[in-house]
Image (cartoon, rainbow over all chains, first blue to last red; front, side, top):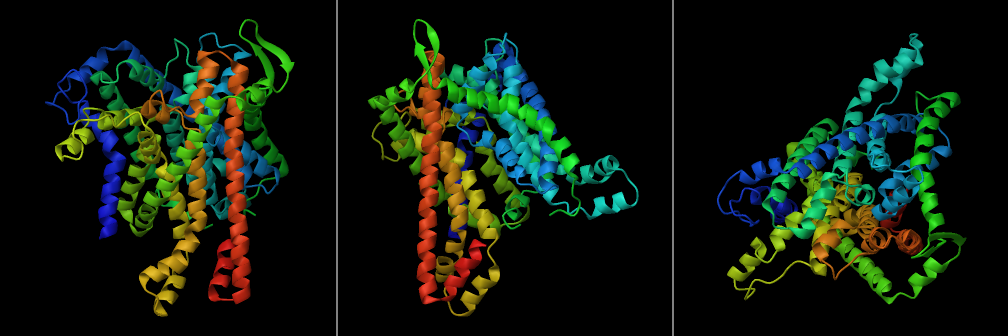
Length: 261
Length: 306
């Protein structure tokens, strides 16, 4: 009973800033207040008029999709190599792929800025894509590993002994069995890229501004602009949608079972 | 190890392409950053390729830098402590609940983490601001006489960090709670232990590994936090990450920024090392104690470590 009440309070703590933004964005006043005064969608329409905000939203969505796809493509062979071959080198490989998630974001950001400037930016978005791929590989990989470890290999052995080639076995047996973990890994990778601020802050040029960077810089000079809450609650809606879909494919309790094996 | 294993050739073929990509895009820039941190910098000339320790020596003599370093460590420790205290009961709830309740709890826990950190900070800005709902409520209840600034202080930073990072603590503790063999608790209860005693002597000690993993994750991530302290702490309460950004982007001094980034990484790693050493010594002493008395908890400790 006490636990239930505590959980409720805690949930309120976790969702209150999210509610403040999405409900606050409905205000009719020309500055943000919570609770809002009046209910209207006028700031959403105002946000649609702001080209810079919309451009950065589109840019972030595309960047997230490209990075998540590339990260999944890199993480799948890594995961297969780690799970299906026994070697000490695999520990080093795992460490190499996972450390981007543990290093300080500004350390990574500065490393990418200095390292990539050797080749030159030229106002293009490849440095951002490269950085986001490195940053999101750990998230794709850790989910793919959960997926691969849940497959014990008997079906593959059966397929091979019945004469299927290695490639055919992978496409027809392994891939369908771990598809959920690929999808979930993609989803998490997308969310990490879509929300990343620090690394993007180092690599953004005037033509390549991600949405978090755009919000961060706007917050500096006009924190109470309701257009900002409208676009922010747009971010919340996109995030929530991807998270719910991902959670449904993963069956979240698999995370907990990992500790057991 | 696995029923369906790869050949050595297949393993290499799978490994090499992603390793080349990560080597070029990740390892090379990281080593380059470490190299740059030893290079000399002159505001007029720019980078001078002359390797020395000047950038690090300069940091040692910088009182402001140490003040920021100390604040970062202190608030990260506080954040870790609050995450442990607030997160433990939630982990208990998480493993007891099933079905949609559990999924919903997961989603609610992950939401602050995966939503852009700028958006989350913005939410706190609205809530804690001078005309925010918390201010007005406190004033309405007569706890505050006037509306006061609740933002731009260290408390706001810790609130923001706990909010985003508590999920790591909850999931780590829940994973270790989940792996506890329930028959031990039933045995203790059957032998007459109260639920509180069973928790204190069995469940809690066995959940310590998860608590430690969670603490390490939360601590590392809050040491390197950038956006939350900058947006919620204002100009007077900087974290180390902000100094790195300032040196590299605003002052264009890459070598000094690189040195700061390396120190940030090393100080985090050293503190982690000390804490794991401390935990190992503690475990050794506990083992010595139990091997002397040879009680049932001794064999249980041994079981938990395998």
